[in-house]
Length: 132
Image (tube, rainbow, N blue to C red):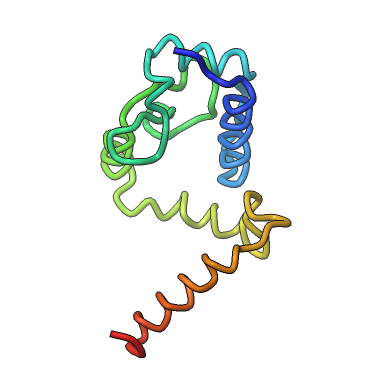
């Protein structure tokens, strides 16, 4: 299978940014990160949706580094996280503190299209009971 190196670098930097927002050190180089994914055989199935694979830390502790990460299905990582920290309050509070007052980096400088603005308007109207 052929992969676009630019998309892979974008995915690597995206994961690095999310780790920083959660105050989790990310010590993997791009080459190490890519090597872990290739070795797992699940690079093409990488993502956040059900059935896709994620890079997770053992017991959700420590930093992202070689030897402390593995590739597993997202739902398995979520179940493991609930076992080690049932309310996951510590992680959620860190996200809220670090994200407070910041815009989503993906949307920075972008605008919604008129079509998506209309869809959002109709969704709000439906939600609040103005349209059936």
